[in-house]
Image (cartoon, rainbow, N blue to C red; front, top):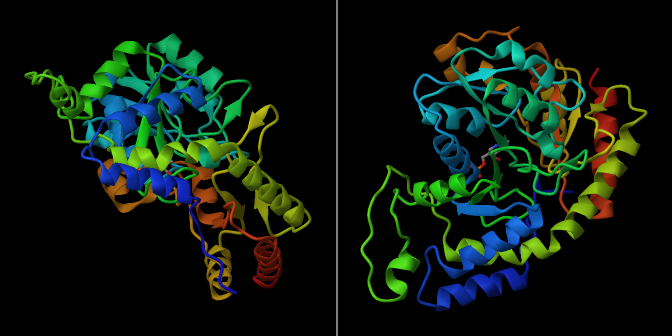
Length: 377
Ligand SMILES: Cc1ncc(COP(=O)(O)O)c(C=O)c1O
């Protein structure tokens, strides 16, 4: 059997929407982007959404819009994709890592205050695999110390914790529509915010700092534009937006299928002494972006390869990023700096999780994991 690591959920309706744009004259940022932004902010329950080309761009622009720059420090987690910390480097600031909670893999909010220095300007929590961080506690710490909060919600579109949604308590939240995300246009992203001033700044920053986008410049009588600040070229286009907005209509239905698959995995692995998995906290809705199993660090790669040999698409999300060459060499991090993230990074294996997985494929994966982990001793 061959089971792909991921299959997207783009439907004929989504393709028709994108095709319609391609038959029209206006391909870049315009009506469809505005429509997607309106629908996305409605779904999140926030005031503004700004469409960009990736979550990396969303993080970069959020840091700029919050005034983070050279020599500032931003507190974040080592248990994430490199985009999180790289975006901090992109504005000339320094990522300051804080270890994670063993139960969830999320930044341990109780350790944040000890990492705050006079240079700290922001906290950048990541809602790992879809389980939200303790945003109430993080907001409280940020307010006490006058810090911005930028949420990396790449995994967490559908999430909620203690009644709080991504972007509700953060100054901004950043989302990804990369190929493996729950809604996708291949590459894409968005920023949500309840702050009018930040939203306006983000709209400028995503397009070179220009005071008018193409839709505004050409819609009526030509209007001159000005450049008010230095921006980047990160604007989402109408083709991307058209692919996305009807996916939004099926987002909860697809989440429910992933939730059911995850519960099946948890049930199937609960008596396996060689496999652990992270916890979805009470009062939480995990977006269920990924399902990871944790095995003994010395066995991880063998289990990974044996699952691959059985035709199962697997991945490692993530090896703790402070141990990657660039971060080790730039900041002198060593093994032992953040032991919980390191252990998790050495133990983790991501198994397939998407609505198109069939019950037969799920049974095969469960059987393979239980068999391989009991043999690899
Ligand atoms: C936690 C996290 N943050 C940020 C990103 C970057 O997203 P993008 O590929 O849209 O730039 C990813 C990508 O998968 C991610 O997993």
